[in-house]
Structure formats: structure tokens, C-alpha cells
Length: 488
Image (cartoon, rainbow, N blue to C red):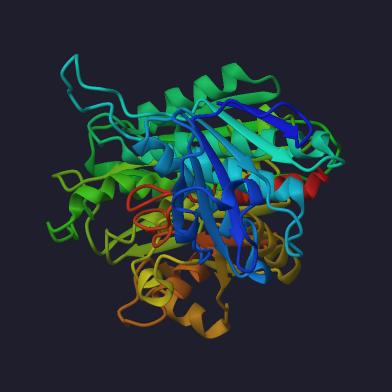
């Protein structure tokens, strides 16, 4: 998509759809006030009215609601509404008049939000649909024009718009990984995608550990979860050397490419959605691609444990005891609590072998988080207040929201094993999200660590710009976090 930033004194853009966004209390420009339909204009949030100044011109008047509430998230939603309207008219270009005078958001941030909403709303997963040759292709936005008043710093607006475009495109790539069926996207598919990313960007190095190496190193968690599948597991380790001379930031993403629950098999209803149990890994992969494309000056170690979780004659059984990479022993009392087992080894590897000084992990880890927070917030659990605050701020900036939940020593009691150091599943049905996070804390060697349980936010959020399917949650959050750390 081509993005142009212009000012009001520049020639009027040639666009299939012009968007005029109006907050409450603001009226149509005098030149438009006499057009048919102008009296129907409403400025309540997301309300739309189409005006036709000429036979080929379309102006979408889009309500923004209360000006005091106008922020980046509202603009993302508004941009998605406009993008869907453009699709109905088969318009491939949109021209936006950037809203001026909003106290809560500066013009560059407003432009970035509009770009994000436009790109995210334009995502489609249709690679497996067959169509007749004469069927029209859905309209896709090829050009976005952002218009500001004379005197605006178009350089800053253009720079933020570029970052937003790169990041939103990366989020859409993560969404496609989430959407791919498990007979296509297996651990090897993720490995190949990691290779593509590494080959496309200078400063990115890739190491892939196969089943034999996983066993040799003593990654008992990843080995146990992969025991029931013929699909080869992999530990994907990526290092980005962007310079800057600072500490290494660790990113870890769970990638169970299909989760049946193993021997503790899940109910059949909605099991087909368990192809998205690799959402954390997809987010880390595509965030690494975005960070590298932006050329951020930072050192990053990314680790993605990838496997299926399948029942078979070789699968791990409830009651089995394993030894994780850091030497802790674990009773596996529920093979459907597999994510924490593979993350435990990945966290240890990220900290000990790759030198991460601070770590964020993302995982579709517990159903309990959906009960607690729905699809609005991911759960944020951390052992370090300052690090948690930075991750939380990135969540707020990106619109990929996270709500911090507590750690407490009493949750450790739920992780203690009867015959081993730990259990992966407590017999008591309480604090499921929190004792799972407390389990993970055992594997970060005391380093500042933040865990994001994205089981509720990775899929079926229902926001205008991501709809009811894959969301790519985490790509924009992680990129925002790293940008802030580097002052970019």
C-alpha cells in the first residue's frame, strides 16, 4: 500500500473514497452543507453518511463522537469502518483528512492509528477458496492519502505512518500463520518462515534445534510434549544484532501448531480452533521481522518452541515425570497443560544460552484467562514492577491491551509436585492463569520477566479492525516495546 502525506494547500488527492471524520459539535464545511444527504450526518462514534458532490466523487462522513475521548484506538476503529466502506464501493484508494485539535493524540500518532486500522481491516484469508474466473476480486486498498493542515510536520507524520504500515503488515502475516490449517502449518513450516525472515534481513541469525538435539540438551518439556507426534519438533532460536550496545531483550513465544490435549484429550467441540495454539510463536516471529525491517538498534534473543501435542502410543502419559532444561523435575498430571512445559525449556534457553537480561513471553496458555478477562485484555504477570510497567505501556500504546495480575508465594503451593519438584497441573481448580505463570517464573533465573497469557486476545476479539478470527496479538505490542526501549 502506498501512503502519501499531503497538506491542505496541495492539489486535492484523486481517491476513490474521501473520509471526513467529524467529532461531536463539529459541522460540515460550508461547501458540503448543501449537498443531498448532508442533513442526515451524525457525529456519534462510527456513524457514517455518504455524500456525492459529483458523479464520480464519494465523501464518507464518519462520526468520531466525543472529541475528549478521541485517541489512537478510536482512530483505528474508525479507519476500519472506512476501509470496509471502501470495499463496498470497490474503491482501492482512501483519502483521510487528519482530525485536528484532539488533545489526547498528536497528528503523527493519529496518522499511525489510521494506517494500522486500514491495513488490519484489509486482511483476508482466502488462499483456499476457489472462485470462478469471472468472479470479481475483493477490493484492496492500494493507496492511502493522509491530509493535514498547512504547517503540519509532514516528515514526522510520514515517518510514523511508515512504522505503522510495517508493523501492521507484520501483524497480518502473523494472522495468516494463525489461520493456516495444521496440515499446512506444522513446526517445519514455522522453521521455513524463520529462515525466510533471517535471509531477508541483515543482523538476523537463526539456529534450529531438532528432536535429537532437544533430547541431547535435556529439554525434557519440549521432548515430552512432542513424544506423541510424528511431526518433527523444533526449537527456533533467532538472534537480532541491531547494535546499540545495550542489554539483550528476550522474546519467547509458544508454538503448539495443533493441540489435541494429548492423552488428556480435549472435547471435540471447537477443537479445530486449536490450530491457533501457536499464536505466541507467530507474534514473536513476525515482530522480529518488523523490528529488523525498521532497523531498530537493539539486541534481541527470540526463542520459539514448536511442536504438535498429539495422543499416540508414544505420547507422554499423565503421571509421567520429566526433567526440564534447568534441572527441575515435573509431574505431568495433565497433558493438556503442555504450553508451560515447552515454555519452561525455552525460557531457560533464552536466559542461559542466549544471554537475555529481560524477557517477555507470549502464550495462549490458559482457558482461565478468558473467564477472567474475556477478549479485551491479555493477562500480564511479572516478577518485576519496572519491567511490567514498560510492557503495560507498550500494550496501551499499541491497543493490544494487557491487565496486570498478581504473583504471590501462595500460588507456588499450587505448582508443587507430590513426587517431583513441580506439577504442571494442580488438582485444585483455582487461579489457573496465575499458578501457570508462577510455574514459568521458576525458569527465568530471577531475571526481569513478563508473561502475557493471550488465550483470549489472539482469536475472536470482535474489534472492527480484526473481526472474529485471528488477531496477530503481540506483534504491535512487542514492536512498540522495543521502539520505546531504543528511543526510536
